Amino acid sequence: MTASLTAQTLAAYERWAPLYPPTAHNPLMRAEQQVMARHWPRVAGRRALDLASGSGRYSRLLAAQAAQVVAMDFCVPMLRQVADAARVCGSMMQLPFADQTFDVVISGLALGHAANVHAWMAEVARVLKSGGAFLYSDFHPEAARVGLTRSFKDQKNDSCTVPHRSFDLESQREAAAAANLTIEVVHEVRVGVELLEPFPKSQEFYRRWHGLPIALVVRARK
Image (tube, rainbow, N blue to C red; front, side):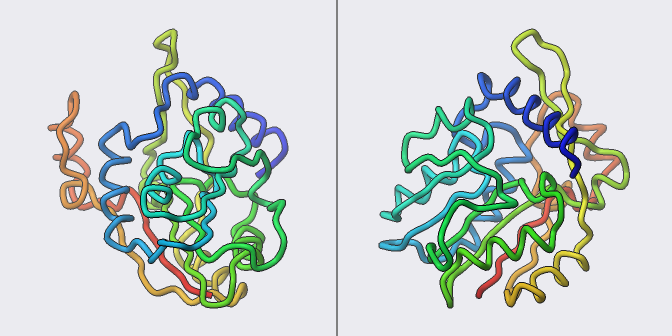
């Protein structure tokens, strides 16, 4: 991801932040979070990183399970909403943490903002302790391929699309292997299967895209 694309992504999230509560607040996020919960690692008493935390929806879940939580994001207006974790502003491509700091890393719908999947996986593996768990999700590359986007309405009701880069599953597997991470679970969140919740004009959406993988959940271990 180029510097200009990173700046565009940051600007989009700064626009979204006032309307972005620390909960799963749309049907896709709710479906994604339900699947993440199915594959959730043990976190009680462990040190966890909510990577690209946004407003902290996964920080809240981690803290509720007695984890020691650090929330890291590059968007200060998002971080200001995090109430259940130590907050750190930084780049997920250069994590400002020592090696083997965390037992668990959770990252929701953020891989597509990475400049390089191999470097991203390597940084996660670096800060993860041996035997540690890494659970992440992202917008599915198949959904991006057919032209679906991540978009929202800002405070003025203007539409905004969040820039997003796609890494196919094979690239993610290769990056994990190169970082000495073993993938244990791959779960595709599919339209009309895991994503079922009605929303405005959803009938046509579900008819057209039934079965399409729209999000991807992966769990790996170091």
